[in-house]
Image: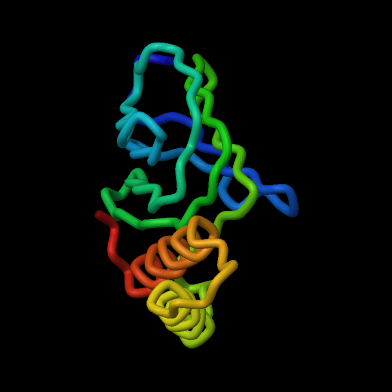
Length: 139
């Protein structure tokens, strides 16, 4: 990456380009753990995990964005993140996320035979992460 104080971040989903701007810092939730990127970072390719992507803009303001699974690329041009889904906190319907959390919790507590526990755990994690992003939690 260029040796300057910022770099270009692109966050792309199957429906839209959610973010395309200059930033100073980003933390991508990868399957290997959080990956922090500053200007001048070495090229890197990795897998994005469900989580909150932390972004610091040129003014030092930090925001969190919910991201689904996907891929990320750190290159000389910047950071590109491609995921199935991504949502800014203000876009998240908290009531809907709370309902999804409740449904998943209820399903996991039930002794219903034939439930897909892995899918229910994934739904629960996704709902909780969306609620964190909606409430403004960056970490």
